[in-house]
Length: 542
Image (tube, rainbow, N blue to C red; front, side, top):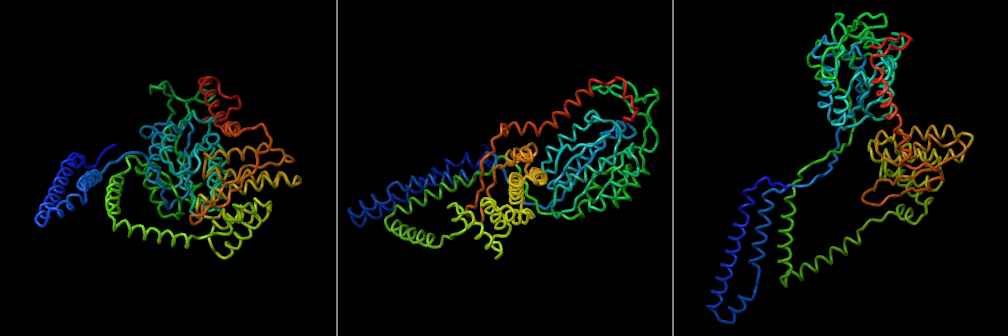
């Protein structure tokens, strides 16, 4: 705990004692004046308001404590911002270790990416690394601190295939951005030296696909145009040699502006020059002109102001002292009874919610549909209608309303609608064995999209693994999600029994993390093979 004004806290006992003394002096003066009239009146004045001086002293002490500004604790705060979707792709091929810029191409790119992440706080950012193949390091997220940790760890040893496949990186970035169906612009920012070992025609085709899909491409060039060698350094930074090809010749690398310009033209994108000192600032200026969509983010606040607590206590003490007086207590009682009766008479009722609580899912679905058609409740009413239809077993009607609810900009309703859409597909797979494959594929797509909104949701992970491992004729069902509470009312909640399978949620989560484990094993094997003879296929690994 800390205080904004500790001196005020230190002075609080003195001020409270002064207030207590003044109250006692006033009471003594009142008794003295009453004694001039009669002894009986003096006794009445002395017995009246006994102990009020002590209460006034306590109120003063509490008010001073509130004025001192106490702070303590931690709180999660959700803020609404306007954000766009942006994926950063970083070239991790060994040519990025060249030191024709200080201190190296990769280190400079990491610094620019860190600045870009800092400048675009509030936007949804994703991170892709690529060399001979590309892989997602982070889905779209507003957690800038987590991205900073990932950016600091970027190194060619992270990838399991050497080389530079720019076309694969463009496709990976496009797929990650297309997982979001929001109204905001989608942007792919690629940091690379432009050296490509895949066919230029394939790279151009991937860039043209970005343009057709409405994804904006920003290329950031790294390195110089003069051929340089690729240094090899020990973990402590000591130079141990230079990278060589299979013919034992030094590998020379340089920035390929011709390839970068061709890609930028095909995608109708922008190219940030390598000579520009503030590349992150140039990218930020380009991005600021793009369209953004509403976004909710959650952050942790420390040392929360708590001055209202002692202030509330002071007000309550004053209120207690006031209402304990006979006349004030009678008036307060009359007002409290009148207010509670009026509030009870005005309490709203929702017949659809009552039908849901009574287990009448078909009737609840009908009432929610009427609300949705009348425009009451917006996306929440459509979600409630779809969820109630799902509980009633009307899968087609449920999908119709849930798909409309999934188009909302509210991330909470969107996540729950996607979750229940996946659940309806799982149930359809069990009921329609002829089209089970299509239903399971749709369930997987819905749950993957839901996990983009809540990567840590255990129920969505379990149901995704269920959709992956369930045989077409097996069917399946997961747990439904409760809709948000509309206008302070309880909404419906779908629930169904888990199918009799030996797979637990913990096991499902372990399976979903197997890709990361496999990547770690691959990196370990690469480090053990360092210095050995390269692959006999004679592929370029820089």
